Length: 372
Image (spheres, rainbow, N blue to C red):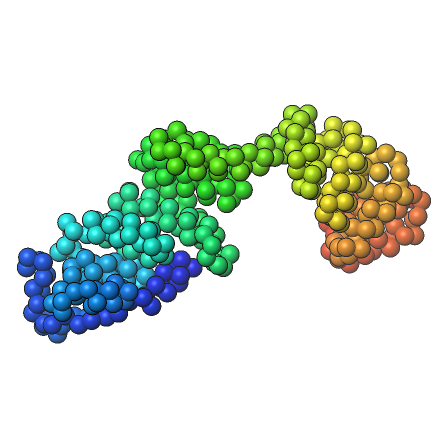
């Protein structure tokens, strides 16, 4: 079973089984209980309420049985009576969709999203082409994964990616549904794809005229404005468009002065442009905010090497090896640096250490070629 299947199975703890007497005919003779009788699942909370509020002959109803069976089907499709339950569900096909959507709506009001999702899972096992139900299930998964429930990270991830698959499958048919784009935006935001989140939420905003929804989506968009700018900026830097990337990233410099990764990409942009002193300045900000950062230390070592300041280059590489002592590629870099500074015996020691730690033969050969 998968992670989501294991999670769904836990909802069966909320079921109580009652036995229907043999030969009982239900729903305009659409279903007759087998001669041996039949145990059917009911939601325990619902059963308790109905016992308090109804006469004995009205405690059980078709919708209560449908809800119980759908939840069980969504949670444990291998349950021993499931084939009989399927025949029961098939006999009430016309009522099924109404019961599902009304039940989901009620569960959402009660903030019982797990139950809503599992009932939708059960329904989709009966009606696997119901696009609206699939979209609703995707939305439920997103809301559960991004809720205050203390989910284990693997389950959160599984729910989010299952939601994305469901929503994407619905996107062509439901492209004018506001909720589809809203939940896709929520998924992209969780994934840290802020540009895509912005695009999805802007589409959702264009598809609603309800003031409360518009206000909520605008709040979401406002929350990611800086993150969108950051994403656009660092992608420009990584694509080699350093001037444009730095220009965008520096618009955040004053308001996000604790974002070490912002300063890292500004520094990387300057490094690419050959503005080495500016790069050193911004890499320094990274160290001040974050403390030691391996890639920053490596970049600083390379910059000082390019500037001909070998001792500073060696110091930064030493710091990197102190923090990460068993990285053979860094040992090869240190061998090159110590060779350049005339410390040949030390360089040979670094080469041997790199070799014993499984360094790339090409890097070893390059380091050895520099030795006299």
